[in-house]
Image (cartoon, rainbow, N blue to C red; front, top):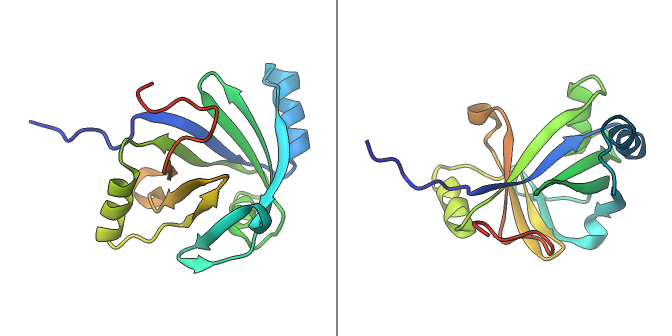
Length: 161
């Protein structure tokens, strides 16, 4: 049986929603030696055309990022209880957990087009630091949301590299 070529070639990022980004980063460093966290706020002021289920939205999150091997770990603290990440945190009793996994694809447009042809609207889409991203509506089928990038953010090697 012939299988199609993989749509995803590398795990790029693990997105973990937490109630307190500074406390979570401190815990990772103290308990496991995972450090070098860069903490920042992201939101409508430093992103472009962000949409939730196809509708434009205003939003803000506090994040911390670091590299663990070749995979970026992203801790996400919601600022609003009713946004995508705030709802995720509330559904898990304020504990949080893995929200999404970002994957590299050799053909971003093809993946996006195939999802649209299936009638799937991305959960979240927009441009972050010059990179187009989509959170694919895969949680029901795969148990996790997959995020795809149009290209790799600066400082992260290219797929297959």
